[in-house]
Length: 579
Image 1 (cartoon, helix red, strand yellow):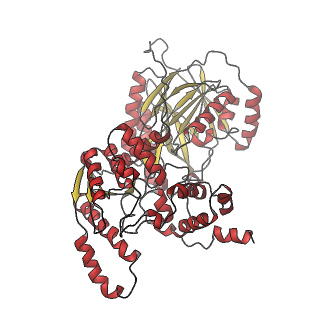
Image 2 (cartoon, rainbow, N blue to C red):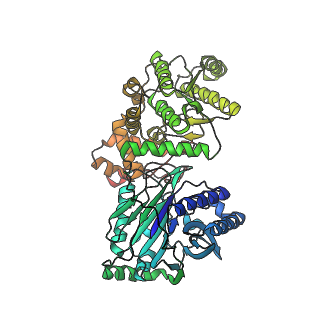
Image 3 (cartoon, rainbow, N blue to C red):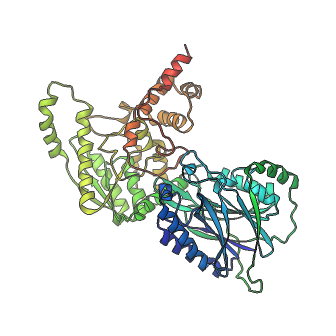
């Protein structure tokens, strides 16, 4: 059996466009001699469709597109994800062949954690069709169903399935691919079956999907792997006629655990492909997956590209301060959209150093992007005159400093309104976590490229980008970071050094560690208490920040939903426990 995994990049809500995409890749798979081609989870609707599935017309239209795709499924079998309606709504996989829907599987395990809200929309399924095609018995499942050993895949293997197809919309975060792949390979070995695992690719709002689709043999050995973050048709020949020792006791044990799911097995026989047709020879591709800074950088570039292009935005505008964050944001934007579509804006104030202006200019020159200049000194003086009578007799401080980023934001958004650009904000996760940013100033924008990237990771990504070609001058990377809102200002005036700050943020935000646990990990108690206070007090700012791509296990937004009005203090609880 030649199986094809269509690692495609659909667009949420573009039902007709996604249908055309699917049919086009079906043609490619058929030309490559595939017997069956598999598309990702909810490929017809795009993933995740969120509250679109609560619109009856949307569900009806998605079913209509399923019929269109089924009509085109001739000479090849197709597995494709869609929203099914059968009394309730289901996250479903359809098996198509000979112009018909031959079988439908309903997702059993509905994730309801992190970025997932599937229990809001779908009911758990109980259908477990096993399709016999070309002498092979094939079982279907959807995404989360693969993560549970005693789940639908075990049940299907127990009932004789030799090929287990699992279609996915598995979002990316760094470090996820390797354990996920090990899990999929483990399922193949546990069930003594081939496992074909296909994932979507591309950006959708705050999520990005990495692809990395795989096929494993019944011994858990990797047969094929698709590329990271790229659409691809992954082809693999599997021989279900070769006898395989199946771990029957293991399968039986897991199947007994799956009995609680009350799955209804149906046996469906369909015609196989014409075995007399000579197929072009293939060598299964095992792509080298991206890792480290290359993986993160590629994820952010893809997410930025898709966020703009899927909404129809052509050009972006970025405030270029001469600092490391705006430099990295500009590099990512140029790589995602092309330098001709990126406009940088220098907006010096009385506190802007000559070096910062030079550095911003060098970044723009290296990247080949357009650069504009607007002095904010006239409006800055004007606001000081307007507010002078009210501020008279007070000590200058944050209110006066923040006039500058708010003026800059006004200029950027005026350009956005006038010319249809989208503003890219340049703040990183360390700043957003601690509230080190100005509301309606540097926090404002249409998309926050670095929203889930800490300051220390910003430096690592800058060095990675420079390994691809000249982009960010060394002085930008090595000089002490400063907002330049007053003479001699440094980030360390308001924050701990980033080398101390970022590990505490990771522990507190991503791992939910308590103050005591953070101190036990080697962090200073006073620094921990200060950082936690900054994070907890800044939730209202984060709610007003633009979306940005998720690249860590726990990003701000859908991943971490904290109440703005919140009297719980981990610091106070720690004090009480230590009395």
